[in-house]
Image (tube, one colour):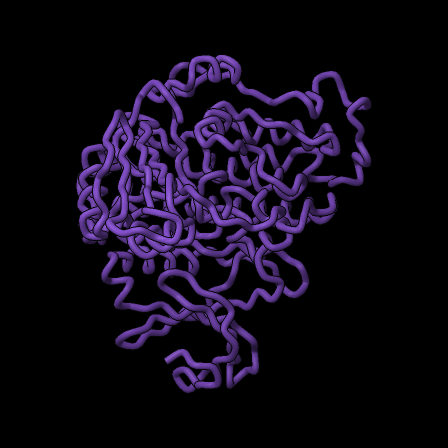
Length: 487
């Protein structure tokens, strides 16, 4: 048992609790032989087996043993009992890079140091045929000397995972850090997808916020699809040029690792381009007030209409390359870290399930939660409680939007009643009940996709045999969408 002060396998003395995910807890520990401090990740074997993640655990072990690098978290050994799996890992005393970025942008020289270490480590992984596929500040740890360590290879892929077309097809990652082509059903190059994620991370470190963000989720998806972003005025011209190459929506023309290493800013750092001002920029570099937008060929299947046109047309859902992801995983919306916390009245999730399946789940869940269907109208379902609450009867609207022909965005929103009563229904009934049809929750910026088993599943068109779905518990929410309109 993982208890503070207990001795594991007569080799490690477990200490303070460091953190946890859905299937694992992490503890500080000390090697009784060497006295070395380590981190021990304790995985509940029964939970992992129930959701079918044992193959993922095995893959993570094999990958971490394959990629030994100064900037990759070291896996010392793996132990197991009948009920637990133990990863003995290098202790990263500096915590997550995310915690630093959450406080604001990093100093240019610090960001440059981390970026160099990130690129060196990712390039090493690629040389060993390993593609991380979930690079983000939450998975980048720091040791006591402030050196970066890549962690969490649970969603990584090996070269042998490629299909006959030489591409990867499993859709995974974390919302704001995933490359546009990852959700494109034609497959993607794992190395190019990792490079895109590294570009987003570089932007976040230097700016203190995400390059692609909008209060309208669908608008944000369009910006990602077109690589439409603004560089703050303190970004040096060299950094702007590098980012425009890394965040190229066309993977065929996106910069390679070799070219990144040859880039002047990567080699020389911020000392070669100090205090750049907007009016001192080269003519070929867009000012901070101008959005960087890439053009691409029709074969990329990315919406190239201007933002203004999209607003006027009300968003043609059938043309959107849905980037639906969210979670949090951590990295969806860093702006929330700088604002006062508040109780949200709505939440969103994405799903690869057909609209009919989503509706059926919602109606079935409503019955289990003793909610009645009071309205069903063109993409909108409304459920109401049977009893009066503190502020009347709780009513929840569920609306489904089609992002692509196979991807749906579902929004759940309180339309009446007490907010805390709504939150209880949402957290205790709806969210656990919907888990087997959810790809990612928007409202969980800190939750990793690794912690959501249903998100490991490849798109049904990309894999003939999908893992058996876990039985869903109550599910409450919506109806199918208007393909021509956004909310």
